[in-house]
Length: 562
Image (cartoon, rainbow, N blue to C red):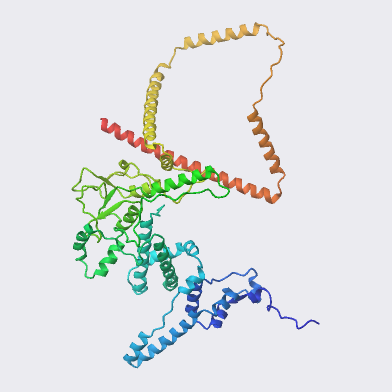
């Protein structure tokens, strides 16, 4: 009564999923085209909760997709382009086989091409959505930009990725937004991701350039006095377009703007929002001031990069924080000034010795630039001079939590950020350690001298023992002086009493826990204890290392004094 009974596996979870082979047959696509379409549209496999039911009782390993996703792919216009491309390839092979070269040329001119603009707009309806998912696009484009020109990847793709990555780096330099500084690979899958990500990054770059009133595609801002200087460099290159692209990729020149920027404009007035008090507004203003100060970290400084240092990364970081940078014109196009310029304040080198040196500049190693950016302030250059053993580099992406081991170098940087002079404190502590070592040495000498005087006569020892026995007997003969006195009120320590009460409450709460809650609590406490053990182990290792360094310094001082 009530209609036909449905068969097994024809309702519920079994109808919500579809295997990959069935989905491919439904779309009439090959496996490579199906994978490509899924990557472009953002459709990925799903693991069913009840795999045996979905697989109709079978336990064979299969890949499942949601049925609604496959129905969604049925109406994609790119599917028709894939089919047209198959027909194009078949006709082209036939024309090549028959040596019909006119037909080959005609087919190549009418090669089917598709665009991904509508997919980008569909997957990222707003600009904020695109920015949130930009890290994967940037990683893939920067990776492909470093690939060699081999048969595994198209040259046009490598050039496009290089152009987009250079455009993004130029935007970061103009906006000063920098804050912190495989063997078996399926290149077809990666190339499909890159095809989508390049389209996405192109849209994002266009919008980002618009926010800063920069021209897109980017153009360099040339001053009249710089045109004559760059003329000699451009003559080396065969084509003007090639020299222009290389100069843009050098990251040494500013970008042209649609509207001239007035940096001296007054800041807009800020009004408190609902629910905000004066303290929150003050904290936000302080953070903004620190941020503005960090943007101008290298402002007024002129750097020159030697041949042996990584030019692109250093030029990018220095320009992002307002500094001027140049290099040897034979190394790369776009040098702004020569090494003989007297206004250069810092020359970055990475070799033990240098032939010609100037008195009015610092010769430092590349790590000084990155450590200063991570510290949000200019570090003393003495620890980074040419040929000096460098201090350990601390990653800005590691954030220590409560109870974690914090290296002494990190504590110094944090003290510098608070405005304390950590280097003076370090020198004072070193002097105190030296004094302690000298005192300990003197004590050791005194102890060795006293060891010789410890041999006393036996007669003196016997006399002392007799005197002690006589005094003990006198004390025993005396009567005990016992008196009854009024009691005194003892004041109880309230802090200790409060702590004892808290500890008792905690013990009772643990006793009243359920079995599962107690198990979780024990796991949490075990993790905390293990964290403390690891912290203590690292601190002990650091202490051993520091002691060894101090011992070596002491030995070197003794050798020098001799």
